[in-house]
Amino acid sequence: MSSPLVLLKAFALLLALFLGPLSMFGLCCMVTWQGLLLSAAIGALGIGPLLYWIGDERGSVLQMRLAQILLAVAGAGIALVLWQIPDAHTPETARIHSRYSDGGWHYERFATGSVLPEIDQIHLGYAVASALDPLFTQKQRRELSAMTDAIYTEARTDPDFTAAGSALPMIYRELCFGEFRDGHYFHYIPASVDRSKPAPTLVFLHGSGGNFKAYVWLLSKVADELGITLIAPTFGLGNWEKKGGYEVITRAIADAGKHAAIDPDQIHLMGLSNGGIGLCLAESTDGPKFRSLIFLSAVWHSHIRPGEFAARLQPRRVLILSGGSDDRVPWEYVSGYAEKMKACGLDVTSRRFEGEDHFLFFRQRGEVLKSVAGWIVSDPVKGIPTPH
Image (cartoon, rainbow, N blue to C red; front, side, top):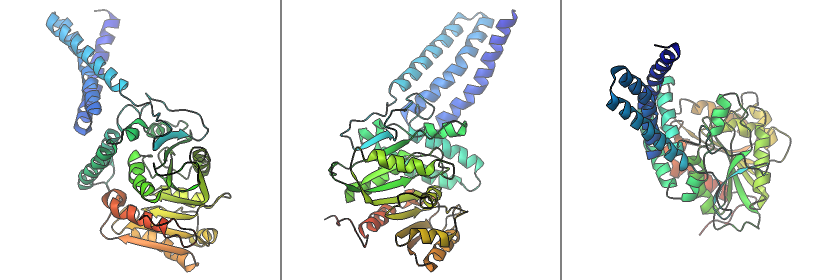
């Protein structure tokens, strides 16, 4: 047997050993037809070449033809998955948009993070987290899976949310030490908003893991109720302490204002989990300030002292929403910082959700959204008219 042929057969074996388990892992985690089909196709790609060479060794034409059929079916399945990937373009009249703050278009339709539906990637993340993170229990995985499935099932009823693509390619860029600050942000504009007239805006900073569309879907309910626009900047994995975080926020606001007018005095800034660090840094930087700050299960910046932060925020307001049983961001940690800001004279409203953990936003989404909407409406200086 010639040496190249030996190497080819060895490669086929290694391919099967790698793609086979990967396919099984995907089949166990995926929930959409695209994810299941792609997982099955990957398995066929792994088995096909090995089956072909085994058939060649045995002189089995049937086995070789079966291998060829497997490879053809795998290719067709992958082509079908790639064909249905959204290009993230939505009509200007749509409510949700993927935009780039430089006014350009940098969306990579076939990038890692775009190929699989977002909900499938979330399930893969849950599986990895349950294996590696001692704080992430199987019980939490089951409960979160059910909650996220429900959210994405709702979001799929709106074609524009599907068409707007995903921000998850940025997390893979950051993981691979690539440039992830491309200015991407989600922009939600309720149908009731007159885009030519300045409207209040909620800017949302995502937490660790990425800028999931589930967040935009949930907060769009507040936007629809109050008639405000929503801006959700993308910052890779959510490590807002890295350079460029504040510029990502301000540039997204500036660009969004070109598509729907924004009231500069009515911009509220909200951060989830690690997004709290982004809030702290944004308000510790010279530049435009925000009407109020909303911390949701959020982390404080370790190098910014409560007294210093409170002084910079005066005379504005801060809302804090957090779980009483959060083992990642304990209530004692959250409330301790908040009490020190209160002692410095800052207007701080805190709400502890008894028995809730770090995934409060999904577990108590109705109450969280009600609290956020009520907070924005209750602005004592220049509030939004209460909807009737």
